[in-house]
Amino acid sequence: MAEVEETHSIEFELNGERRATVVPGRELLVHFIRDDLGLKGTHIGCDTGNCGACTVRVDGQLVKSCMMLAAQLDGCAVETIEAGPAEELREAFNAEHAVQCGYCTPGMLASAAFLLERNPNPSSDEIRRALKGNICRCTGYENIVRAIERVANGKATAGGAL
Amino acid sequence: MLVANPGSRPLAGGQSLLNVLKHRAAEVEAVIDISRLEELRGIDAEGGRLEIGAACSYDRIGASDAVAAAHPKIAAVADGLVDQQVRCRGTIGGNACFNDPGSNYPPLLVALEATMRVVGPGGDREVAADQFFQDTYRVDLGPGELLRSIVIPAADGTAVGYSSLQAEDSWALARAVARVRCNGTIAEPRIVVGCVSGAQPRATAVEQALDGAEPSAEAIAAAAEQADEGLETASDAHASAGYRRKMARVMVARAVTEATERARRGDG
Image (cartoon, rainbow over all chains, first blue to last red; front, side, top):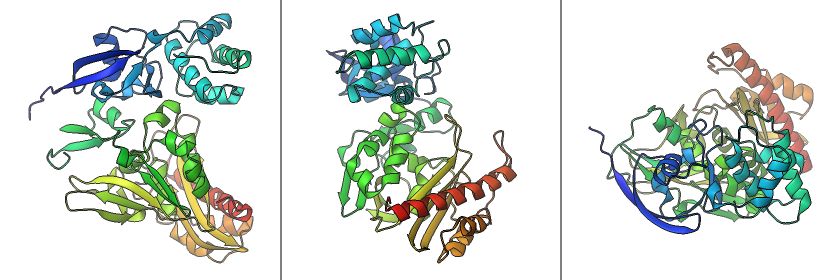
């Protein structure tokens, strides 16, 4: 059977804004976000669900966007790094030099914000566990953990919207 | 839809199926998204018995007080799976139906005597977990059939041990799950050896040796020596067949030890 490129109409919320469009059935969410929506802050590291660079929030859940189809976004709300500010986390990443090449940073911030929403005062071990799905190949993680600890220790509530 | 589209597959969390599709490792005519069907996502607990919807995420299972109270190992396995992103998307039914030899839930479901509730064109039916898991990547689901939920009977005083040989982020090389009753002596042991085959084989020789035995380290170690009886392990890049057999014995000993200790403490 010849491959038929099926398309799907989807309605969704992008960083708080209603959107409607048509997507190919086989398109991954990460490609949709980067190529169709033009939001390049969501990175592609591996395309196989291992590195976490493409991590976004879908209906509040933490999702590797290379492991979800764009068509599955229908009726959902997606938040990407462009939704900003997660200001405190960003400042803490700066202050602790938690960014070197920056490729993993959007995914790290997403996972960190998710953790702090659930657990405003995580231990160092809990932070490491929460970052398990995010690979950094520059910093060795120490400064990233320290940045999240800085936010956790500095305040009682979570890191704000991603 | 599954019936009307031969060659289609249900897509739940997609944490395995999407990679299978990316690698073109399977031919699929269509995927049918079941991940947001509320009737597949519930957790019902009644008198220690659990019914978990097939599309219930690991995250939901791991956070459920009802699951932790009724079957703490079901919750602990969910809570420890891979990473937070996978736990948000991945589902217990997907884990079961994929049935990789290294999948976490199949051996646990067999040990706990779970029942798989299936819906399909021929009506609803129920299959015992040890019949459901047929072989590697093969389960007892016919064309158009869908796993609806998994029913786990009340622990009723039994306790579970779960032991894996696993470097942090890799697939486990060896695994065993043991469920025992232990009031002075071991009774009703059910021991499953994981990471060998999707048939989720029981270590029946060990079960027989332990039924009625003292839960001593010596008795458990001696019985576990038979854990690889009848097992066919394979060599691959990660481990030799012989190493896998040896580790199956070690995992069985550890799982039984943990189960007897949990039984003694009343931990379930």
